[in-house]
Image (cartoon, rainbow over all chains, first blue to last red; front, side, top):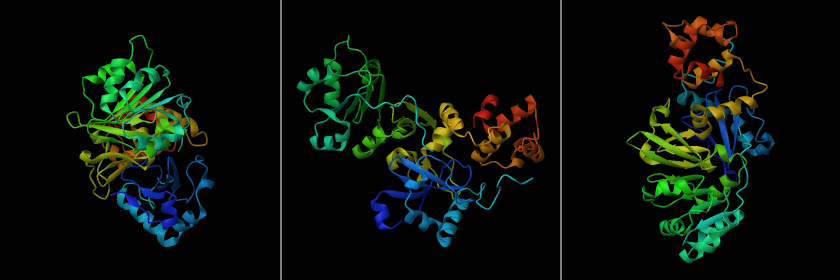
Length: 97
Length: 274
């Protein structure tokens, strides 16, 4: 089941969403921030934006602070691991073997 | 990742065929010519061009449009039909429009989100609706430029947490960024990435700073398929896969490439496009 990270009412009202969907491009584990027709992917291993476009600066700091809070981030990572057991956040980072 | 297409242009003229006059306010930013009566069709439709966008919520107005348009008229542009559609009318509509979109049993985004997609720079890579065909076990998704993309049911694998896609409850949400199949959701960019080589090619161009080697493509594709390096055995052992992915193998043998393509479910020549 798709994971929707709970947001404050002001962020929800502004149409922000934070999701992990059952079918994502698995490269690498990430969470997707959505507003309207724009989506930003954040790498759960490096905690960095994966794409230059749309401009990461458009994502409010309030939202980033929420998802980067230790407990929240752990919850998001656990959700990813549950949905993508073959590509866990703590797993293969491409440097093994 | 937003991809701007060269093909993107604003619709030069929008025509809204609708009896519900309230709905036109949601399309206001597209400045639609509203046709709510059959008598308005003849005059207004003369202004249509090959780049016009037609959105119809009324089957009687669609029928009247087809009857009133002279055969000499060039393409009417793009046609989106958000009402029950007689299947016999589809070939007629296809011959008069450059591209058409319709849904017998699926649905389209609400007017606000449709407008948002039509105005988006990346609208080619957003979905506006879907049509499920249970007989062929496929879903046709309509993109923001009204071009169709047909995807087999089996492209939607069961989620790691056991959630299965429910194809009877298919709809597009999140302003064209997500496909919802009951409790199951799929990212539109993942669907495009898996099923549209042209999308992958455009994405690859944007990855200028990323590794474009065969090994990197193989690794991305293997991850996409949810496979471990061991999953290529007995044909190829995991150490060989690791060496290829790490760029330590300079020439990939034809047999190796064939085993990889079989296991990954793509043509041998397609591996590099991932």
